[in-house]
Picture 1 (cartoon, rainbow, N blue to C red):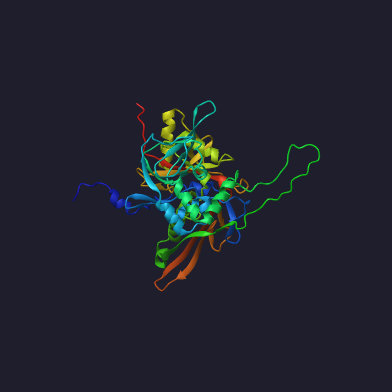
Picture 2: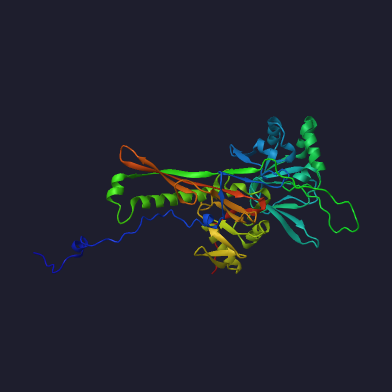
Length: 460
């Protein structure tokens, strides 16, 4: 006999109905990129971007690898130099072997304006800035350069004085090659000599510029008007549908016996669809062929000046995508680092309410967070990148691509197809998300590179 005088909660709970949630999943994110991109329905699985013809443009980087701890030029990537694009591998290997390693410290002058520029510098590691003296003697920054970038090809090729000075912002390593090495190659190889002469004679032609359209304006009288046409690229880029895919398996006895109050197949398919969409967003950003980070044009890449993302850095991005910028996309840690820099300067960003959430914005352009933005060297102390894009087909921006219609579609571009029941009584469903993304015009996308997120300030 015990002292209990009423029904215990444990016993009463056996007669109660439990209120249950649907299955939860920590990996679900807001996926702002998928929500912010305008989507184009592709009828036949291929999206062709026709563009006006442009002059050939590389990636503005010379790749470097570490050979036993020492950086070395990858010979094939010397084809980034316009007059070496048709050079043979032996010649490129010889030129790559002529580069010598130079270490530098923060604040060191690497080159002075007006000096004879007899070396081609390739930054292997570190950051440097190009500076010039303004009209009235004031100091002005032209550009910040980082890993893989080089200076100054034109002055080095023409053996002319450097038009700016270069100062190191961080400690680092560079690889240099004397102009005499190039002269020796040209003496032995007539093809390289001819290509270099053609490069030197092409005054006013900027790599990546569109072929001009001849026009006349402001004239009087009856002059002969220029005749012209707009030329197109012979081989426009085509985007084929990519996919994320899996087979969902549910035993029939589970769906028959344990299907209430929550539908087991619906719960399983919902979580699987979320996982496919998460993979889709990651691919749109980081895929080696069509990922947005890998499709930024050379002139649209900006180096963080001090490491931490500052208002000046985002302003520089806005100068690259100034025609109707849509949004920034960054890792949450990068957005937090930007907020700290704004707080330090006393210019807190404005809060913009979009997609049902309060978001930081800069110059009226929201910063959308995404944990799919990559880190180099580890998310704790590594560096990351910040994208800025213009979106929409009418604005010649960035667009998402998906099929106009697929069989057994449960969401736009996502299908769930019953594959039948096997001999073990397991029903299989093929779940597929089809997608891609396209940059219609190069200036619709820009990136801030080498962004550091581990810098904190003492406000006391």
